[in-house]
Length: 385
Image 1 (spheres, helix red, strand yellow):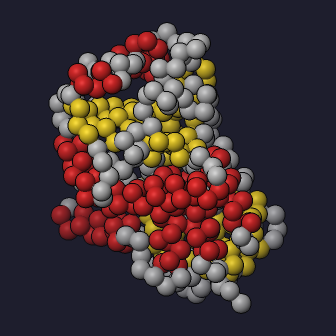
Image 2 (cartoon, helix red, strand yellow):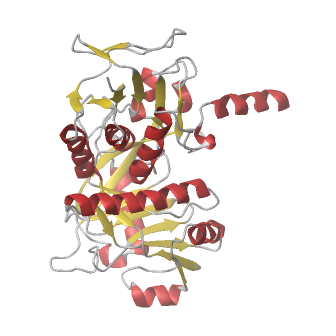
Image 3 (cartoon, one colour):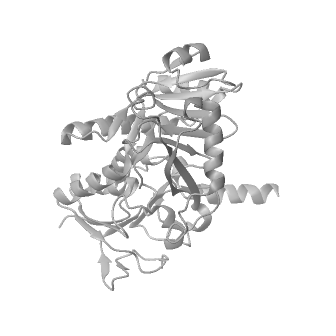
């Protein structure tokens, strides 16, 4: 019989790993508490940025380059357009060290980029006000992804290629007992039996695996805003404006067009701790005011644009913003993937490919993502305290 793998969580990490495992011959059951792409998931919502600029963290540039190729391959195979190539515009102030390091990483990954002066950028993209901008980096191969729709489609592919998709939730926190896990209780009174388990349940990882994850994944509250350009004005559509990131005191970013929902604007700074299950997802007045103040400075044509709505999502942040991808230290047949930290969605196809290989006997995708690094850091703190 083929190896039976149970994947808990149908977001970007879990869904793509389940699909890769299915294609490698495993028998896969993919479960999610509310279904793939649901509104409470870190992989929910309409859109996510796909960029490969990561400063000195080149492992992410490498994975983003591979993910970009796999997103394009998936779109071609299924006649879809989950990836929208708009380019990504990075705006830097006096300090562009991140951009310089990122450009070197892009070159090493054979991904193009262009440095623009603010004057050159203003000629190409006059919708943006460049006050306080010292330099501009443009990633032409980058863009954005249709998040919720892609999660749904990947899960459909798992089912179409022989896997089983279930809407169910794990009943209680699970702790390793020194032996392999064989049976996981679910809230509907049934059990999930499998040979190998992957916990890829995003912001719920600390809740379900308190002994090894606990505080190493902290959900934070993130507000996203949508403003309405004037009727018939296409300057802020994805045909004329790229995805943009303003690398200032706070990292602000936005996605043009955004499936005709409006001009998307968000603050990438991690917010307050958040309960992803029952936390309030009502947008705050303070958040709207701060977003409008930013629009007035950086996109003055939209200063008085109507507020169309917003949403509260969450990041699942690890202490160092690195992913967590490793085998459970107390059960050899249990794996963990999470800590997307607000930048993980784009990596789904590449991470799924690498993790599926590791679960079937290959090497770990990246040593920097192992769980043991937190113990190493704790020991270092004790040494110098």
